Image 1 (cartoon, rainbow, N blue to C red):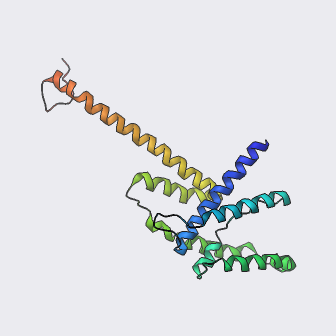
Image 2: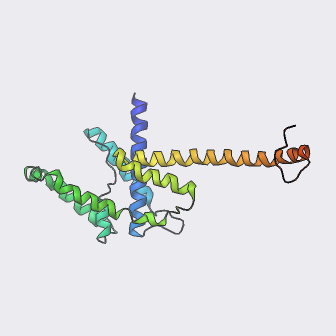
Image 3: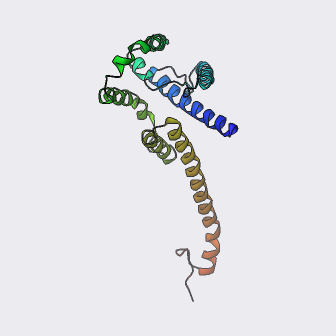
Length: 199
């Protein structure tokens, strides 16, 4: 059971960190020419250290959250927004009685706005290519329905490889059909017919 728990935690942290970090990095315009985020390993190290410390303290995995997109939208690039948020979180236990008075209906619109800000990079997806469009579409749809970015990314990756296998089999069948075609033409004796007439 320990190995299963570690494996599950690994996938949750890796997928969540990778998805949010890359998306926010693209929103901030920090990706290099190859589409990679410089210094990304420090984000992974921070998530790994935070998740390990959180596990010791009995909390859920500590990862980069989508709400960081709000800071990026307002111009945050250096991490000062995240540090300010961390300090405010340290002060928040004093305000818990006041925070509990705020109904969920009041915070939901904020999350909808953050989600709409994160939809910007979708314009760069090539929806003309089915190999890219279908996995991207499934990732975008499954993530909010499953309440998990890691599950959405997993579905997207799995569908990418399944679709690749299906298209590969279709290509093999097509090549095989073209190889068999001359024998049918030879049997029928008519170049216009691909299938010989039944006697």
